[in-house]
Length: 260
Image 1: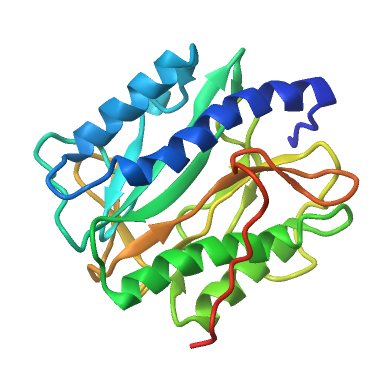
Image 2: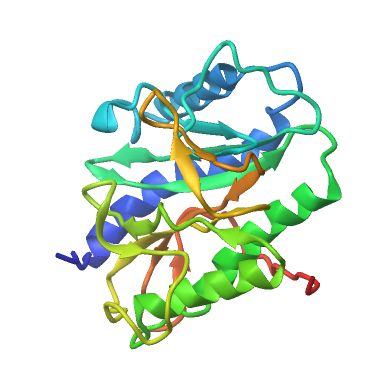
């Protein structure tokens, strides 16, 4: 069942989303070679608690940390560890959320660790651009498939693959609500977009093939072929006009890509 949010509910979500957006904006100044993924998680948890909110992920379904911190070939749900040390040339995805008065936020970014390859720079940029391609379809009357198709086309035009096994989703009083928002699909298919819908739109793309496997920790999804993956996510409100991004500070950036 798709839950349509009231204006009051959306403003409560916006408070949680503002903290998440600020946190993600500060992380580039925190992440550096030599730190561990557990260091990132600790910093994020302290940031959330300092703002009198709760981590959305910690304990959710048994997840043991505040943030999913996924490195290189890890797509999503990386469990932070004191043993996982970041090195120059790595890329690291941080996926997290906050809870304010029982309402959730959800967002993710992929960051370079020091200097990275041109291919991986383009991978990160394409994940962001794919989100904005999907965002253009977030108008009343369109369908979920229009978002999905736009994300897929953007990623594949750049020569990257789209992960099939994980999708975006609705978000509100629960972290994961209906409808699923795949990152691939056919236009004009799926539920119709309606004002008051709140969606976590999250392209996950990879350099190589799209197939993933889950590690023995039962959480971390990794690329079967070992290629690097990137993740970009925001919480978005469908309005009567243009969509409202709750987890992005300031004006919407223009994500411009050259065709591969």
